Structure formats: C-alpha cells, structure tokens
Image (cartoon, helix red, strand yellow):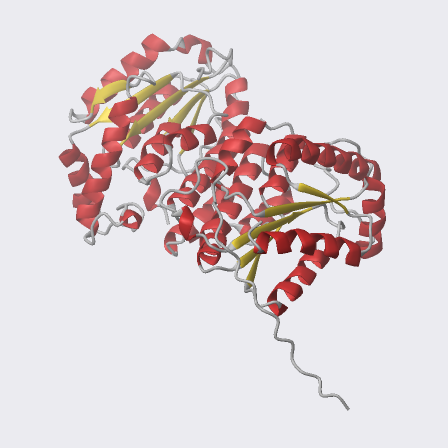
Length: 249
Length: 245
C-alpha cells in the first residue's frame, strides 16, 4: 500500500485517527486553521459526510437496519464517494488534504463488529495510504469521560449496541471502545502511525502536530499562488468541538 | 360425466445440500441451517428474465414450494438513494459499485438468508454476476469485485439468458420505444449514439459474462428460443436441484 507521495501525486494527505473523545477532530481543525492562515492550499474532509450516501446511512442508523456487513459497506460507499470526487482530484491539483478519520477507522470498527479483516481491507484497497497519519492515543477512561460527560445520551450504533455486548448503553460503549482501541494499537506499527499522547493539553498537542507536519511535508510547495478561494470542506461548517461522526443523525 | 379430481402428486421435499459462500461470507451465519434453495436468473433487460421467473414461481408454488423473490435495487436501506444518485449520474464507479453491493447485502441478510433458513426457494432476478459484469466492463478490478461479493452464498443454480445484442435492441424498442441510458452503457462514453453504444455495451457485457462463467460455472441458456422452450430447460435443471442432484 503506497502513499500519495510514493504514487507521485503532487498533493499530500494527512489523516487523524483515534477513539471518539480522543480530541483528534479539535487537533485537525486547528491544523487546518494554521495551514489556511499560512496561505496553503488545504482541504478538509470528514468521515461519513458524503451528501449522496448520507440519507441512506442516517435511515439505516435511525431505524437500526444496519448489520455489520451493511454498516461496513455503506461507510465504504461514503468513503469512495469522497475519495473519487474530492480527494483524488484535489490531490492531483496539489492540495494538502486533511481527513478526520480514514480507512483505519473501518479496519478497526468493522473488525470489532465481526467482519473478516481481509474482507474489510480488500474493500478499501482502491485507496492509497496517507502521507502522514496521527493516532491520538488517550487513556480509555479519558476518552470515555469526554464523551459521556458532554453528551449523556448515546446513540445505538455509537454505543455498539448492535453487538449486544451489554444491555446498558454505557457499559456497551465502554466495551466497544476498548476493543476498537485494541485494533488501532495492533495496526499502529504496520501503517506507521505517528502516535500522539492525547492526554496532554490541547496547545501542547497542536505544537507537536504543527512541528511534525512541517518536518514531514515541504509546506512551501503548497503556497497558494492565486486569489481563488479555498474549496468548501465536507461537511461545510466544522465545529471546534469533537463532532462524532457516528452521532450524525 | 366424469368428475374431475384434484391432483395429489407427491410434494417433493428438497434434501439439504452442502452450502458455501464464495468468499468470506457473512459473520455468524450457520450454513447448515440454510435448507432452502437459491436460484439466480441473469440476463440483460429484454432477455425474458422476468417472464421466466414469473413462470417458475407459478410452477414452484403449484408444486407446493414457498418462494420469495429478490432483485437489484430493491433494498429498504439504499434503493431510493441509489435510484436518485443514478438519475443524476453523479457517482463515480467505485462508489456506485459499493452502493450496489450495499443494496445486495441488505437484501441478502434481510431476505435471502432468512428465507433460505425457513426453507423457501429464493428466486433472484439477477444476482452478483450482473453487478460484477457491469463493473468489469467499466474497468474495475476483478479481484476486488470477488472480494466484495465473497459475502454471497453460492446458488443452487444460476442461469444466464444469452441473447444477441441486435435482438435485445429489437425487444427493448418494441417494449419501451427507447433504449435505457444505463443498459446502453452511456456513462462509459463508448459512443454518443445511443444505438451504437447499446450494441457495443451489451456485447461487452456478454464477454464479461462468458469470462465470469469460466470461474463461476453457471448455465448459459440460449434466450433466442420460445418462452416455453426456455422454461422447460429451466424447470428440468431446477427439478434436479429439488431432487438433490
């Protein structure tokens, strides 16, 4: 699996991965603000945000119609739509593309839901590897508390209730997130994740993120030369607060 | 006058046979429990698929078998969205392909597998092969497709109603007075002329089917014959399946 740089794309893709509540969305948002201010060609795309596929996903989630297989396939459909229509052309045009979650989210979650690992990886084998992947590693309890404190009502799939781990949504959420974390850690070396200590203060983490990005990517190459506005991100207005994708109605 | 009596032919109980998935399958499914039978009929629009399936249903139900039908773009989950996306022709090929796979998986888990478990004869008005052939014609990787559709159970019989592209043109025009955008492969840009595009696309589809036939080994049925002749051939093969052959 090659990176976009290895495939000779002029653009670069940076992805963030981690549990719900690990702070990854906040960090990529701040990275985006910085790159914008520096005058870079930058584009942001969030997991599960394709307009076309969204209505099917929300219907499936609301009516609890999804099985592990259809859950996996519908997220792959969403990803493929963003990948083919936005990511690839923008990377060809020399953009820095920022992804809040990438295929590793599917590798982790779908496998926890019981899909065969080789099948899931095969589904996504049309996608290239990010040039840089940050994994936000927080203590499980920290992530859990961030979600459970702020938003006490857990949605069915978000809590992994479809897996019948526990009749109690909070307990189910804990077990589910714990298993997802195990999956992430198991693939960390294989995909060369840059592991961030997500227990640190927001500013401390952002300092490291910006430093690593400038070390690994020749940002000077991505300076905007024209006065064209930056393309609209998907979804359009990103909140500073962690916007959990599974929670999107 | 002789009183006409009801026929009391012995109803055949199809014996359970060894079932398997093409690939990874669906997690948590007990294959031994799938005691029903799965029959797939493939073929282009105008090949007589629906007519044949309607006849088979009639025959099977009269013979005492419960049937259920599935087809493409009929899932609760994504059929409307898929229809809408296709109208605008806004999806790229991998996306469209995965959307169809989602549609198939939804029907597989909610209709096909439960029906097979309940001992029904499931008639699939097109199955994974049409989906694969369409994508192959659009240049998608066959290995990738095989992995995606590794979730599908292997049917007990698969028929491909084969008809020359020129004859399909005649049948489609006679029925609709027009050629369907997708069935003409207009999205690929083979020709700006819908007639030429239809013929070229359907010819490509046929070679894709012949290629798939080599690895999936389904029965190619000469669709240029009469409805009755074709139905006789299908029944003969299906009778064999029901008898456990």
